[in-house]
Image (cartoon, rainbow, N blue to C red; front, top):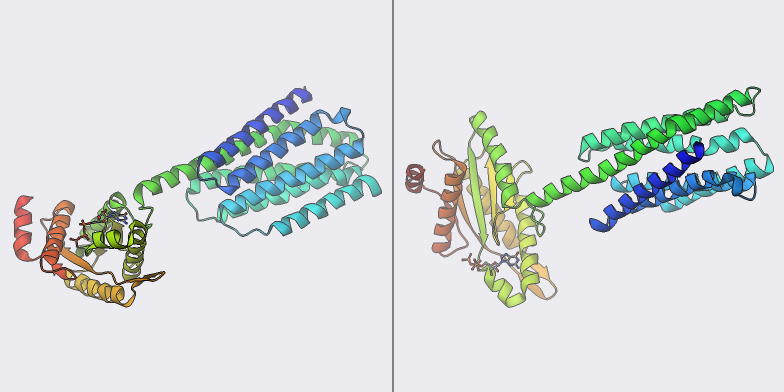
Length: 391
Ligand SMILES: Nc1nc2c(ncn2[C@@H]2O[C@H](COP(=O)(O)OP(=O)(O)OP(=O)(O)O)[C@@H](O)[C@H]2O)c(=O)[nH]1
């Protein structure tokens, strides 16, 4: 019966290792997925060692190998979680931890054979590591929170079961050895497999939700400048718009378009053109507040929506931004490029919807370009009247 259970756990561990490895290969190669793949492979090995226990050369060999594999798999699992949350982990510290634990295990198997300690070492360490994982997951501010909370609770439950195993194991050398062995087996083979499977699923759930949130970010963010793309910008603007409307506050929109950008591409090549876009985006980001909605809405066209600001205030921001552009030319190798841009600004009026506001800012931009470029134009009442009647 126990052999069947162990064989199933070997297969399940291999499946979980494969799923993690696939996640690693198929999507941007996150290192933590690879570490978890190694951890689950080692878990498969550990269950296999248990399965073929009788065939091994000696009990000491069984205990030492089972313990060493167990320490390694737990360390890889922990490392993977820390890596996923961008927490610095010194591998030398992990190696030192592994060496000390393996030596301790050897001492209690060979030098001072103590059933209780050699049995308790692995679950005791797993308890500490799982508690640590649960804590870092709970403290993490990374999205998605729900998947992390689920994983934290399961890791904590798994850790507590391991802690219970360790506590029972520490009493193995007492008078009630038989009862303790029975209790130890009940926890290990009754409770642990279910929690182990739940833990494996929670890790896959973490990878899947990470992937989903990465994909939705990619759908809203421009990969070149890391600003919102047009869709992301419109979404951000809609929520800003709703807030300003609710609070009866002004809202203004600015479109900025780099002048003669085609010439930069033609003269210096596309990669310098890309750098110019990144340079422009960085200065623009630094010129606005985090709460403003900012995005790259076309090739060399950027837009910012300012909550609680009227057009005169935004005009002043545009002027400051132009000065920053002049102060900070793009320097790349021998190339030194001073970027210039034209700006169209429109302030929200009662009859505006987002499309008409954007259109008015666009018309003002067109006027700035027509007036010779490197200029800021604010949408006037005349165009406002025209837009409002359009719609
Ligand atoms: N390097 C680079 N170029 C891009 C990208 N997206 C669009 N472009 C180029 O941007 C240029 C835009 O050219 P135009 O629309 O004529 O604008 P312009 O030369 O800035 O002229 P004005 O706006 O009238 O001052 C085109 O040559 C596009 O190929 C990009 O992601 N990277």
